[in-house]
Amino acid sequence: MVKCSVCGIRDAVVFQQHSGKALCRQCFIEDVTARTIAEIKRWKMFGPKNRLLLGLSGGKDSYVLLDILARIHPVSRILAVSIIEGIPRYNREEDIRRLKVVAREYGVDVIVTSIREYTGHSLAELVMRAWRKGKRISPCTYCGISRRRILNFYARMYGADKTVTAHNLDDEVQTAVVNLLRGDRIGLLRLHPAASPASKLIVPRVKPLRKIYEWESATYAYMKKFPLQETECMFIRYAPTLRARVRDMLYVIESRRPGTLLRILELLDEVLEEEARNLSPEALSRCKKCGEPTSPSRHLCKLCEILELADVQRPVYSVYYSENSDPA
Ligand code: SF4
Ligand code: ZN
Ligand code: ZN
Image (tube, rainbow, N blue to C red; front, side):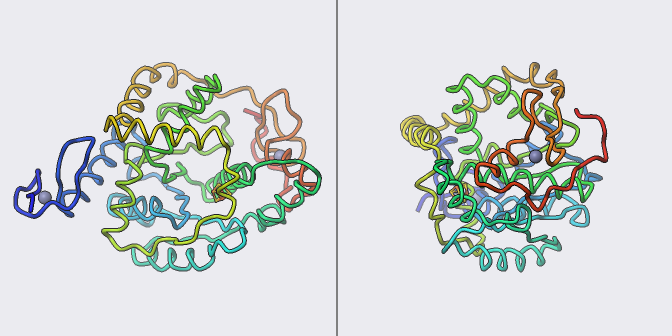
């Protein structure tokens, strides 16, 4: 049996291809934790006094995020939100019930809400309504835009300093490459950890696991025996094709040249830092329906727009957000 490259005492159970190290369970968990803490410090993601709003899905990454943050941040200043999308046979209620039990052991409260509670319709209903009208919008578009909005809504309501999400290295590099392929310069810059949000109405979002590979997060969650979600979303086959292709391509490159994903993100962090820091809030307008920020050329925000396509004219959340009259 190979011994751990770090402690040299225990048997190695994981081979970390990007570093060339063979690690025992304990040293692997310490390695992931240390790299997460280093990333938080490097970008000053938050300090001990900050109130954090964690978006937790019940997937592997969210357990890893919860486990690390609850060890390094005062739990009295952490609140979690979990969103039930409303997708048939995707046992989210059961997953979230288990997530709540684990979170309680760490002393973290979880608010459970749903896309239905926020918009008046479940995700499946929204998709069916849009499709009946001949609008072939991906369920992932409804899902992503709604979840992002709901998280920000709770972060603002809770008075959080930061919204914290469990995106891992694979997620981040996929998004960066999709932005590159689309020529979306602002999208790429806004992804940078030094960039501030486009509007004061958006609580800054941080991603402590952004340098942790997806397989590392899965291994960590498995080692810690977290009660992971087992069912797959039935809409996965409708995920945007460009992103799916980018994911497959990156997977092949990474398996041939281990460490590629880390090198891509490190390089982007370095070359984009100055421009990202100087990125000012955009002169956004406010959505005519809900008051949330939107680009100056649009009347409606993205969420109101896609809800209209699903023939939802008066969403439940249509409470005009007017606390801050400054549109930026
Ligand atoms: Fe949402 Fe798409 Fe993921 Fe399903 S596959 S949970 S619809 S983002
Ligand atoms: Zn070891
Ligand atoms: Zn709106």
